Image (tube, rainbow, N blue to C red):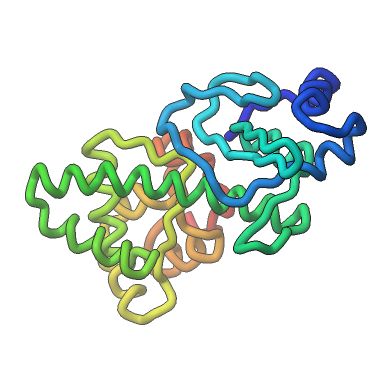
Length: 227
């Protein structure tokens, strides 16, 4: 997700931007409080390490000199800057999870925005239904996922590495999964959890072959045992 460069040159830049001349003290001046941006393409650069080809940038604010810099996720996590969520300072593990969840949310939002354009262009009622359900619940049923990813493939929308949550606990969801053609399930196989992939096999499907685009693009893990 980020190709930030860690090292002595980046740390020197950090000291130059801060009021303190020791790394630990300088790091303590900065915080990430939630402002971020998705450029939709890797066209930005990290203002701390100067690495280019950044799609996502996060704003760090300095409480001492009021400077602001936009950095890649690699620099936030690699240097262990203070990360806050709803005013609470997160530990390193929670901070990494929060940053990754934020990136995933932006990736999903970008895909949904593209699909909304398709709905308006084509007056696609089935896709509109799937999108409304997703926006209301944050999940897709198997039937909605099939509609969703049919449109994604047809429009050539890149979903890598966005993960969409699929319902598969309810009996109605399992009935929907069983009724789908396997080639349609393969379209969203990468977004299933390992347990869901096993369940999909139990419902009559099989994993996509190694040559399938879903495997090549998403390098799916957790294959089920039945061929």
